[in-house]
Length: 355
Image 1 (cartoon, rainbow, N blue to C red):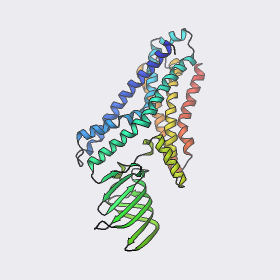
Image 2 (tube, rainbow, N blue to C red; image 1 turned 30 degrees about the vertical axis):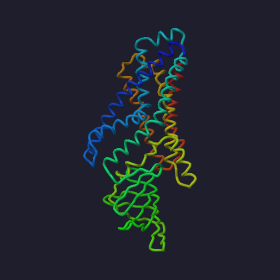
Image 3 (cartoon, rainbow, N blue to C red; image 1 turned 180 degrees about the horizontal axis):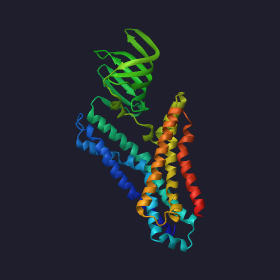
């Protein structure tokens, strides 16, 4: 790698990291403000809210990197173009493809950082943050490794293994105890929805009731469960598929498929994480034809707004597709890659015009 290549890589990385730092600080501030309503609940204090916010910083950085890469690359390469440094570099014989190759090196470094943070740092710290908040706010919840969340409400013990919405859970197990702590019944529902108040609507609920030496089986069907445990309470302990690691998602997909359970939301989350990481390549490369064309003499403000618009459009498209995948049962693999493919297509078309 030549001196010019290293200079371009440093410029792109420096601009991206600067933009990312600004966005993370703003995101952390909003996250800290959103925690103010939880302060005073149980033993949750201002310092706990601050610690919760700090533990979520890596996850915010992971989510924001594709967006900030667009903005940072446009600002960094745009500054070189505005200062005529790109013109000088091109005059030395560096082609557009060679310039794109240097930008690609920066993109690969960012992808490596994204992969490390997304797999080994952010999920673990975010899970620790959620557990810390739940432990401080409530004293009747525990986390059992891969078995989900366990919570007790009087003579009921509930266990949920996944969350598919703000008020909907799946795989809920219900253990009913007598006042003398003897097991009266064990039930399982494929889905559980918080209906407001103290009511839970359980779908496909089947239970076994124990009485002396007899076991009575309740056939599968709907059931209304009365419990003071709320959906937000259980939501502290159940991971969103979008926040799980690739390894966890792959294992969960295999388990669901082996048991003939719909795993589309987890398949989408798995491929969406990969596609979003790959999109970083095109986030950096997109800046090259733009700064060589219409954005060559534009100011930093114009480049920032353009990058922000592209990043927001990519983010909103991904979220819209995610909703459509789950609601309309569309192919999760194709739709997970669709925003990145569109992004890549636009980048290649701009490159063709730049050459």
